[in-house]
Figure 1 (spheres, rainbow, N blue to C red):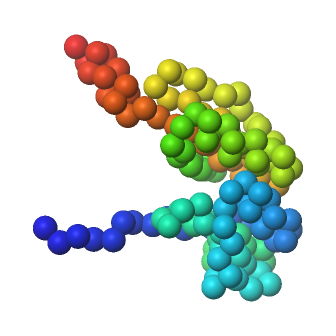
Figure 2: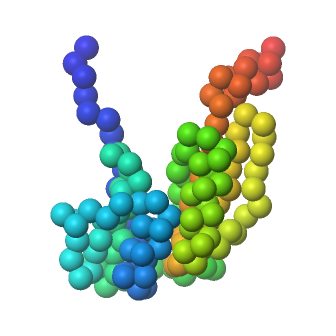
Length: 145
């Protein structure tokens, strides 16, 4: 079977203040990619496969005629970012909070899965999660029995 490259995701987010949003995402652990940047857009990456395009409202509006909702008041999507451990969930969330983000939801601890969330400067919600896949599969098998 031929090997294929892993799929990547590019999340496009409208932001009101591009420089402030860049600083926020860098503080939260993303890395700036200046190959995809100008005065209206900046790509930041959480990994080799997870990328976020921060777009000014004007630039974002060039891709769709739909109105940009106020993410502080409405939610169209919840973005999820996995981490390798509970400690990394906490570290990423704490970095985002220290950079001016908010924690819109209480943490969730289900034993085999742990998560927290943060909202960026524009109100976009990121759920940061860790899961013990072996424990999750065992729990599913027990529930099915």
